[in-house]
Length: 350
Image (cartoon, one colour):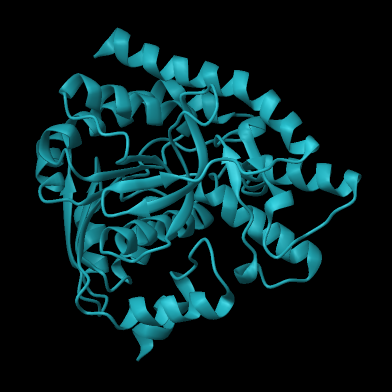
């Protein structure tokens, strides 16, 4: 069946396990008709939102797909509705339809916001995207407070604390259900390391911890599976490439946007992992930026065992190499600053 093969190639990349295990998981996902999930994509008309919505439409576990944005979503939904998959797709547009787009949602994915342009850091997006995420979180906290929230909008290091503070103010905060999607850092690490060592990237799993911007991105290459060893100079260069990969794409697109297709893939992978875990599949692990006590930063990305209620267990940092210890030390002050900025924003404006 065409859809089965497509889903197998595009969606199934569990964070742990052999290539054979992944292929089996793909076949299980693509042939199951008992699984179902209601997903809302907030910012579905944008550069990430459209390809992400397509990938979710291809996922047979998704039965309802609500697409929200301030423009164009009825057209995007109409276009996707012609795909021969079972997800019922509906478009919602503008403030008047925001709450309706969230009704019944079990997973809310938020790629909404403006992208980076050359010369911009993720933090430069703060003033615009902070308000967007806060307003979407406020609506979700009211309409679907038990839904899992997967935040893509940058700067993730600040927008996850913003959403969390909004949920706290609404009295419905559950730290196990709010996630920063840092999966793209893992996807990039796997791709770059596989390419460098001549290994199929689908067989590589490199945990990436910390945050989702610059020096807060900490690839744990010492914990990579299969084991990958690099000389000191190449280890440093590889780490810096993973940290600066988003800028690499921004420069290559020469002002026309930032990473959209790879981010859509990573977000579809993370959403699929959430669906699997919430529907009873065991051993589903993804790195994600969540409320954490692993370090002194109150939010921190680590490998997370996912379960029916979201975070089942924070798997922590494991044993770090001296090089990685140095990366962690450099990341913490930057992370704490970004987190405090997000919290302050909500306290001042909501």
